[in-house]
Length: 256
Image (tube, rainbow, N blue to C red):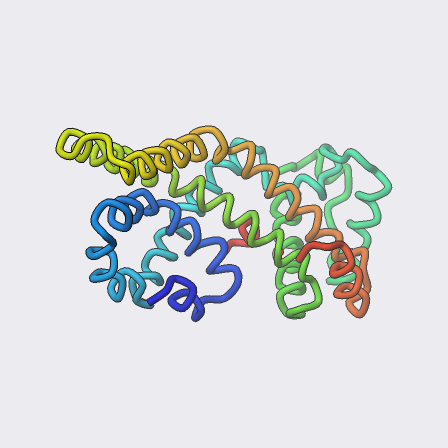
């Protein structure tokens, strides 16, 4: 069974934001099985490893770990990027802030906290902004296909967040795999397959250690937040055409 066939039953978000991080986390072990043992153990175990139940379990583990990482990041960021884009105290563009706040209020008929109310009780104001953002997310989700760019950036953020969440587990797997490389080297010497696998393991280590970091996740989160609030600037009947024209297609922050 191929991985592409196994994940076909999962939706776009689940495949990209959950299944792919889980696959990358166990990739070092798969490389050893595939390249150093003539693929036989991998072939024998593939029906189990790629079963719907196993992938569903893996996707949920990744989701939980990603949500835990997100909670830590929200504290570090002083709020979700979507919340910060609605705050008076964090505003970088007053005109855009006012327009989006007015659009949110008009869309749902609920007033947002004023500048004075936000200053008097920032926590309560943030709760109102979070509630408004969640309603906007529900509004976007209820129109499948109209906001492909939001869907794309949502999955991109989820992918980044969940990779950060599984990073400790992935590093443990990678360390064990490097140890296995060393054992194989002592047993067989420096063979061609071992050079390939060892090089791939080093490459994966560099990616996990130097690229998959909170700053990368924050960039993805801020991009998603911008795209989500841009939905307020587009009439529903124009959203699909204008977003398709951008050349891109994505809750991390929405609770997925």
